[in-house]
Amino acid sequence: MNLLEDRLQHANGAVVLATIKVFLHLTMSMTDVHQQVYERIKAPLLTLVGAGSPEQSYSVLCHLHLLVMRAPMLFSSDYKSFYCQFSDPSYVKKLKLEMLTAIANESNTYEIVTELCEYAGNVDVPIARESIRAVGKIALQQYDVNAIVDRLLQFLEMDKDYVTAETLVLVKDLLRKYPQWSHDCIAVVGNISSQNIQEPKGKAALIWMLGEYSQDMHDAPYVLENLVDNWDEEQSPEVRLHLLTAVMKCFFKRPPETQKALGATLAAGLADTHQDVHDRALFYYRLLQYDPAVAERVVNPPKQAVSVFADTQSSEIKDRIFDEFNSLSVVYQKPSYMFTDKEHRGTFEYSEDLANLTVGAEAPETVISAQRYQESDNDLLLSTSDKEDSGIRSSNGSYTSTYNAPSDLLSSQTPAETALINPSSSTYSTQTNFSLDDLLGLGVPDAPAPPPPPALALNSKPVLDPATFQKKWGQLALSFSQECSLSPQGAASLMNPQSLIRHMQSNYIQCIASGGQPPNYKFYFYGQKAGAAAFYLVECIVNTASAKAQLKIKAEDGTTAEAFSTLFQSVLSQFGHS
Image 1 (cartoon, rainbow, N blue to C red):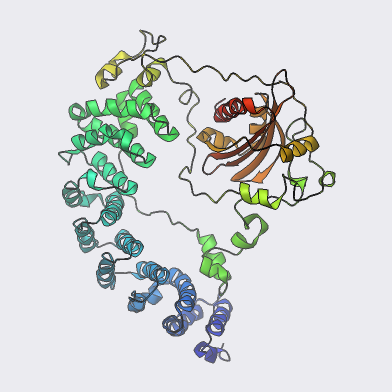
Image 2: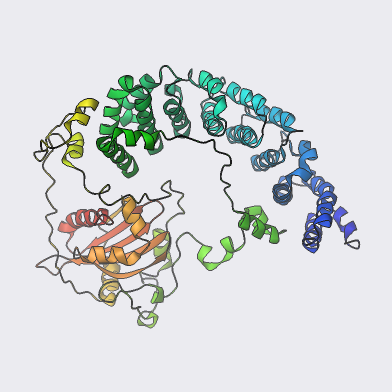
């Protein structure tokens, strides 16, 4: 280390970082010396950040960011080195904001928060958002938050939608950790009109506070009622979910004023096309039907302050990145195996031979021999152009978990529940609990007749070998190309792809080949028109994260292609419900 110390002053940043890596790894088992290394390498790193191009500064900042996250106290006195400069690119500013958040402590919090508040009015909207979030994160990790809460509440007075939205989200988190601040926060939040908030997360945060503190907010029931009246105009499922829960909470705190709004909310929720919204409304309705006291304990349980908010990155991942210091892992903020191993090279990758596509019709566990086909430009299953066309982009869909309720709770709706959505159900018996419907003003309308089943009938035992399938696919023109949705239960059931194959087979639609890995799966299906020789061929690419399926359908009988498409989508939508 003594021999290499002068390399810390080298003009080449790569030499400096390589030297630092040697120092860090040599002293991993020597705690005192390791801390001295941190002190020694601070100055060279900060010098490199200020020299050279923004791209070089960013690379060095990424390594400095890693060290700051591991030992924030050692960098707390150098907080001014991480202030954003006017000329800094946005990606450099964002990294500096993260470091300022990490090194904030009792001695420097006031100065850091003051600086961050200046960025809130930045013309660069993403940086303004990040600065507001940084102030909120500091508030959540400090004991003395009086001044910080005052600063956050001042943001609500700024006439900027994105500032208000970000601040409301942070105030919500603050109230979850510091309930004692509810009086001061609610006094300011109560003056905000929901009509002035356009961003879903900001509106959802406001609705949460209206429900949680409805006893302290005089107009809460009427604000919620106004939001329910505009239910159909609200596009965000997140907002509708929060609205369902907020109205339920408000009902148990102020029943007379919220009774009408609760009835309208449950009726709208049960009629909602979004699966999560519908299921939550159904859950609340059945809870109220079972026992209102139980429903109150579920919706309004005694709450404890949140002490720690979950970290987005595990300590194991952080340690792995540290082990790969002075590499792209630090810049990408993920271990190398996440972006170099074969299974992580793309969002939807297929093998270069058919060995990884399994036959799904008669022998689900067998494998098609790769030697049976020679890859060519016309080889549809394997061609590069087809892979590019059918590749699915990475999805960060919002559906992150599946609620496994008892089967009777997720079963088909009772006549009373059906009547909330469909006017006039003849099966609605006198034994139904009318008292709840009358209380909430829900009524019992008539249901339309169920839609007729698809007219197309399929051969129950179609026969088509892989070679003929591939030949037909290459010859036939595309009849339909569209996207359809799977139910959340169906997406969850695809943990076992064979279950989808069996489901389709039970409806006379056979699988000729399948492949892929979570969250993306690729299937080739076929069906045959009953009493005719015409085949229908389908390429189905499913992304379980977004619960979406991309369909390409080719038909030998073009006059019935649309009927088959309707039938296929109907069968697919039923997957997971049986």
